[in-house]
Length: 188
Image (cartoon, rainbow, N blue to C red; front, side, top):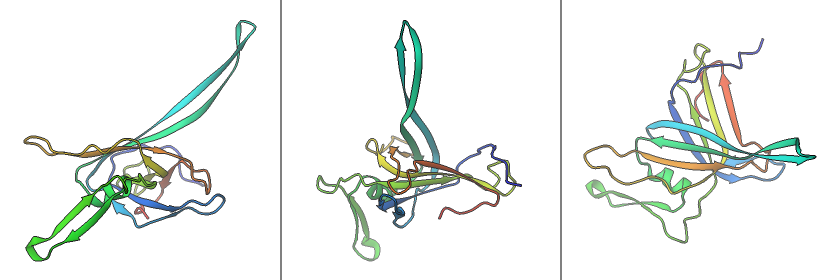
């Protein structure tokens, strides 16, 4: 008997992104190395539906609806230069030695390429109705929708956030997947 398709969703324990490196029509999408989204706090998924109505003879004859966008908003507690490079572009370079080491993320007009990426988030074990199970939300092909919310906050912690729009993969048409596991599984 299959597991229940109905569950609660409690918290988010982990999230990772990976650069989309290939998306051949009719083939298999491939991704780069997983990058941790540090201190994940929230992953909120929404969508837009466009409805067209056909009218005639002074009455409604029919209507049709289509999903026109799926969007995710992410908030995380810690800044990651690698995440910035993966979602906006640019490059991270390391320099110096010993106590003079420096990591720098630089973004220029030439490399602000807004590359496509995958995002996957997961509940903690038991964050679903299945004891020992978990739920993964996977957005297969995202592009940043607005520049990430960065900076400082006076006498307080500053969290990082971004929004991204989903596109269907050319490889298989997938936009989003919800994967409910009977046994909790790490993001892979």
